[in-house]
Image 1 (cartoon, rainbow, N blue to C red):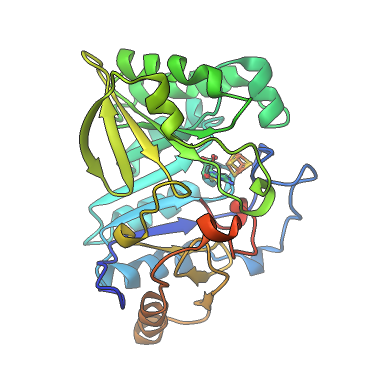
Image 2: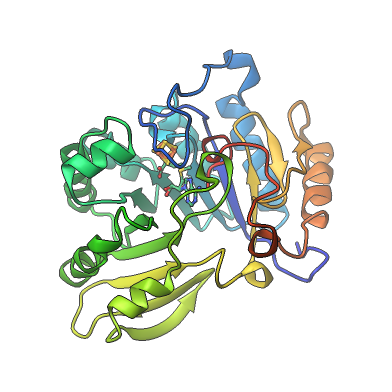
Amino acid sequence: MQDACARDITYLRLSVTDLCDLRCRYCMPAEGVCKRPHSEICSVEELVEITRQTVALGVRKVRLTGGEPLVRRGILEICRGIAALEGVDELCLTTNGTALSRMARPLREVGVTRLNVSLDTLRPDRYAYITRGGRLEEVFQGLKAVAEAGFSKTKLNVVLMKGFNDGEIPDFIDLSCRYPIEVRFIELMPIGEGKNGPFLPADAVLEAHPGLLPLEGSGVARRYRSPGGRGTVGLIEPMSHQFCDRCDRIRVTADGKLKPCLHSDQEIPLRGLTGEALREAIRKGIAAKPPRHHMAETGRSDATRNMNQIGG
Ligand code: SAM
Ligand code: SF4
């Protein structure tokens, strides 16, 4: 289905939980979030039904996110149910990677096609700092398991932070040369805990590496590769190179609210609806997609939730 700006909506980002085993400083409050009663969060069946109806309206790619999707009870059942839906071409999952050493293979077996792993630093002390206690070694083990399970086109999400990981840009580029992965540098967004964060424009990557060769873009990313590199480099620049005219996505939160735009606080409740009534609510959400966000002008997102409550 097209929205009012003639954008084809083909991509659903579905959050399966607000909870997480880490507490990244730009995403979650130090105290974490209160665990909500199960009844407030969509069940496995509801998540599959919501996805089924978005697919009926033209969605072809689904990404599971959170919070941390791998802490959600029933995550494999959710994946299996969505992978079995006719019309789903890609089922992806974004994870912090801490559980991948045991979960990579089962995820592959239930039909997950691709993984994005979030990793902002390659130094154990910095990792423990930014995640408030995470162990980097777990993510390295997880990445190894991802390759062994046979996943390809894995992406590494790196949120750029001035004074924190700008000195590591060459190390991440080096990773993209040595492994067949895409390292995606993402601009920090002024949303939730990320407000007033140490913003660094993604152009800093190009300044540090003028030799990167441009490739055809993909979705909302500008893409590059190093001469002779096995992998690629992507830049996601919501702040400095707005890509709203190419936006092809809707989001659904773990409590069943459709968000037409990450940066708007408009939410359409989907819970309790099935079949045609659910489809009608999703149509309404797609029609309500705003043309663009206004973060570059206002310096803030209009979304009222933290990122862990939306899914990035
Ligand atoms: N827990 C999973 C993970 O970390 O990959 C999935 C959820 S997390 C909210 C999804 C992505 O959003 C992660 O790559 C994270 O780094 C990114 N993110 C969170 N807060 C952000 C912010 N304020 N600006 C930019 N990216 C952010
Ligand atoms: Fe958890 Fe992901 Fe947010 Fe970090 S970015 S606190 S891993 S949800």
